[in-house]
Image (cartoon, rainbow, N blue to C red; front, side):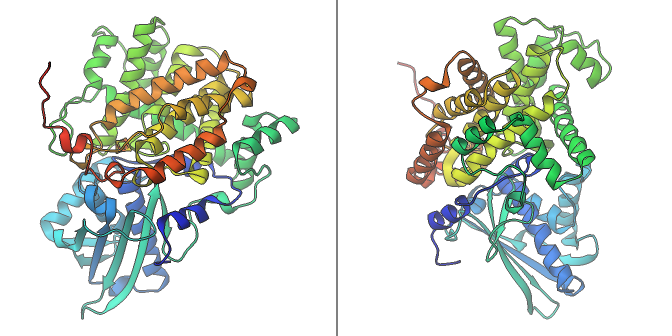
Length: 493
Ligand code: SF4
């Protein structure tokens, strides 16, 4: 694997006929980054699994982690070190109690020890993680090698992982992740958007039913239904929490949380609800005027990404940096657009969003380290646009048209987070992604897709070729763009 180039291997990943489960595309996790937090966390979990399988865990005395490429350059700002400590400690990002996200790393740093998989004490200090900023592994810019040693400093096991975007990880020498269900047989298989349009037109069931059938073939029906509800509930809880939490975001940039103030203005200072359910009911009585709705959408998106930046619980959709777009568009749909018709709405919304995301994941990338911000905000906007259009009653061709429009106007978007933190421009950028998604959906609903000159497949291909041409300075390295110019105040002329 070492001598294969990044592009060759990405193309190998992109070639298969696939179905990616909604629960792989949209994952409950912890902020601030899917590729730099969730991915490394999952890599640590897999490393622990290898130690357990080889019955080596109790012999480990020290673990060293080498980070490469983008993980090394922006890992500290993106919480990679924290994710590693939590992953090696044996916690899962989906279920860890939120207070432990800060408490465990603090304890590790104070004691110089880490309880590996909550079983074995090992030495662990700041020098256990090496940030190799000048080295990039060939397969992918987000590489990490984990090495475990025993008391006599003998190497027990060494494994290399790549965080390929959206929390997906690839182990060196293994073709796909254990989390990814795309290699499993499902009733409806497709390899691109055109395939799918043909499939839906020839079928007697709706796109939503087809996608649900695929999920039911992978899990028990009750489990699918429960997990879909859990996803939407987590998104709504995250927004509620973000709207009601003030303060300064961690990381040293002194970014003040804006969602609570904006929210206070929108409810005119009248917090006459006692919980999230009453708050949601109140949302449905809000004015539908353009300015008010626009501000609510911004408020929802900002709330999620401030929670994300503060290591809160979010749904990776399809990444953490872009986690606010899909929930914001969902809130617009559910509480402003379709205030009455709700049965099955969240299932359709999530399944279609996931479908669009999976087409980008397989045909291009959802990793900012590979494709810049077009792969994060661009993809999330495209996913939300397609989902919204479907739930508004659009045809499959209109769904794909909306998804295409949303991506078309994100092509070339760079990733240049200031200080390596997922805060500026990331938090605000989610508002732009959400608004563009709604615009794209509305435009598709009043258009005839037969008149469209660019297909969704063509824009995915274009996004991928743009990603390949993009200078690495603009791919989550914080070596260019806003990340290098933020302190320069340009005088007005
Ligand atoms: S600039 Fe975009 S891609 Fe980069 S970290 Fe921020 S949201 Fe993610």
